[in-house]
Amino acid sequence: MDDCSEIQQLILRERYSRDFGLWEQMLCCFREDAHIDISWIQGSAKDFVEGSKDMAARGMKATHRLDPILVNINGNRALATLGGIIDIPTVIDEKEFTLSAYSQFYYKVDKRAGSWGLMSFQAIYRRDELVPARSGDCARMPDELYARFRPSYRNLCWSLHMKGYEPNLTMPGSDKPETVASLLEELESWFAG
Image 1 (cartoon, one colour):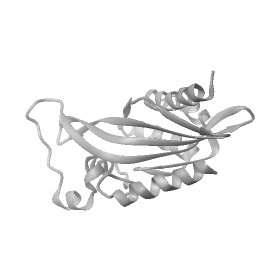
Image 2 (image 1 turned 30 degrees about the vertical axis):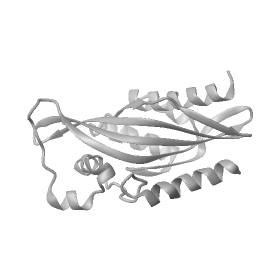
Image 3 (image 1 turned 120 degrees about the horizontal axis):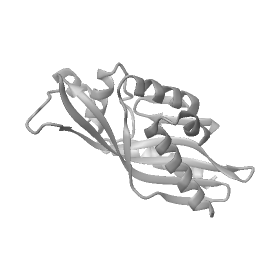
């Protein structure tokens, strides 16, 4: 398998494992020193897997719709990106919804002892929406939360908040282009070595 295909399969395996609760397989995709920085967790890969288990136990069983993966390689470093939609079944006031958060995912990947491993997982949040399971149902976010949460991932923050998480409100998002530029600059700097 060539390097690009190996990296693509690694990322697909990580996301598949996350969606289907294959926690050990998910953890094996990451390096021990990997760092995760997304809306609900900033920490190690082990923290991410344990947090994902906890999230599933709380009823936030996210699944991911993934776009094709673009891989760029520079020696033993690779930068991979793909668009994705995070779908989370959500119940508000006894009504069922699907929260869909539209994002761009980024992975730093490196090659050690002949094999590739994930060094980081980060995201840019574009927009999100709540779609009712029953046409005509609606939910209203409390005014104070609407004012507090960012437009690019407001409904995701609300869903996290309802499950007891404190969402990170400083993530890169389309509503704050400077945050996107900063992340892309950091990723390119790492990739260039």
